[in-house]
Image (cartoon, rainbow, N blue to C red):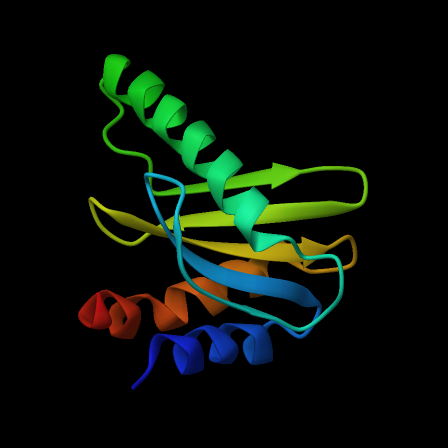
Length: 118
């Protein structure tokens, strides 16, 4: 199955989400899909990659292990980040009305299949 189709399934499971993307820890977008306007996954991917690298460094220095998931919440939008493997992570851009539990489930439900494609 194509990565794009897998990402679209996450948007279907979490209907209030705006975009979903697979990014490398270098900040490059591998693939992205959007269900709404204003979801700038290129910029989000680069910024979240930098944040994730720093977050992972902090967690490693505290002996917490590698970062698996992170939620960044702003006034208008938020981003849920799920680590896929050593090279890639998924981002799900969420609206303010999105239930975080549903968003987490959406990413976890596609993770095994996405991991197999990468």
